[in-house]
Length: 322
Length: 245
Image: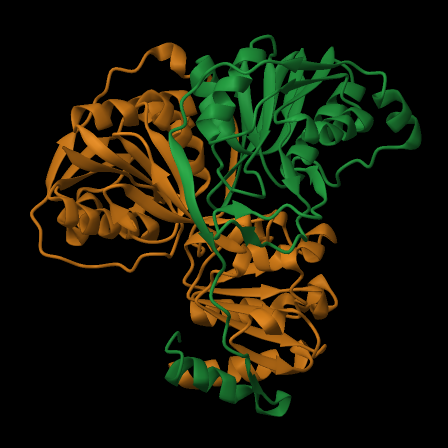
């Protein structure tokens, strides 16, 4: 018996959420008396693989076959399910990300397992196995009971602290037998930025709304984000207007994020926007309208003009960093 | 090519969320029901592709009781050719996927929204693909048919990929797939009344998860305000009080 984790990497390194998953799994493993195995798909260095051990992984299954780079959901799900069976995994853990959402449902069917997605904390109880998840896009929570022997969980990002531990980790090459016919995707083109902070992985996010008045006024936000090592985001009207790419849109229909610190600058905070950011640990709002709903969700606020406030923020951050 | 669009019937996204029965059930009193926003965008894109040629038929399908029919009629009014309703209370995602698998076998492309805005399961599309033994592609933000082949945009970390993918396939779609959802025109609403809506009996499927109870988030402490002229102080508070900088 074991707990299996599906890890994610980017640019050859594990994303922070992978360490979160390992920490979370290690806590469950301790409770139920079992071990943690992580599967890594793609090219990751030996050192990076070992780093998963620092958070409590006992074993790494390293699947480096380049066939999987096209991310055929059917093939990846088969590989993960084979690993789960080989490890006799009773809990299979994913992050609530594009990848996790793509693979977890398929794996749950293969393993005759129940699936609960968007889990926000350690299980409420182990027998019966009950977990808490977000529903209504963060406006409420539900306690959900598993009625199956094997459980598949996707964990909301940033809902569990990283816990470091001393651990010897075993790395094994993993070469599952997956039928060639499962690979039907051809990647024609890949356009991605590298060397930038991933919005969904960022601990701090600087986000701008209509209050900025124009896409030309983003210089201050970009400077703030650079200084803080933060991700850049925007509200829906901003991406609809084409001021910023829709990749940066956070909200109910955009990306759902939960950083430690979220700066909502010139964002009024429509309920759909809050749906995507409300689980941020600390929210800072700057808006000239005192009645803007963002102030109900925010922890710190300034009623005023963003274009006057941002330069002051930048100056103070520079001083603080100095 | 035939397209099936999965439709979830959800409370309007501005609904005030409340629970009844000692917090064991969602309070649907007075709730307006809508097509799940992502499903609506999927349907819109399916219509756009059909108008460009190369699509024979668009069907919409859901699992729900008779009370969900207005939502299916709305999808017909937007422009779907016909509708299928599996007559059952939608239980967990596996139950729903199992029902849809019974009616989805005849389509080349199945479109599902990335999640339903009520229980945020993000599961039915992927489960359906697995039950049907089809490939699936998730985080789809663009969909085109070129020379009879399916070309999709897939959102990846920090960017986007363009893929050619074999059919039959389940595409789980998200923001970007269509710009604005279509609003049914009066003519569409009139025509929708005459379009076929087939009601199908459910098959048996076990429930694998069940809701025990619901809770609302704890009320948030009041927002601490800082003067505009004194914006620097806010950064200090983030550093010293909130300890997030």
